[in-house]
Length: 81
Image (cartoon, rainbow, N blue to C red; front, side, top):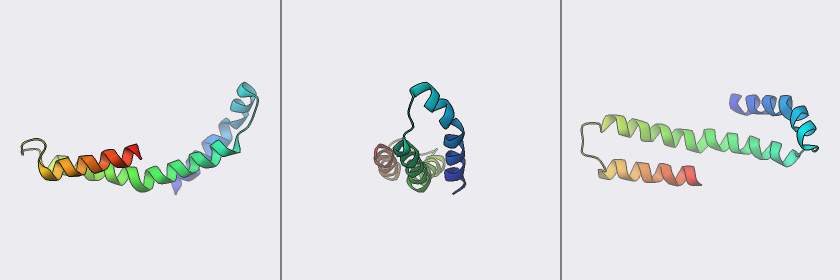
């Protein structure tokens, strides 16, 4: 939740600069950015942390084992989504 507050504060702080350069304000960009920050924290970050953990515990194993391969495929799908 703190990341959403920080993003909102940064966007509100930079809005005058953006408006003076581009000559318009877009409310759509503001709320879509907040949604994306929320989704990144909810989906992408945990998925990447799980991949990092699986990668760390399988350091001695041969590459592309079944568990690592499936976790990395899932992380790739989440990031692409």
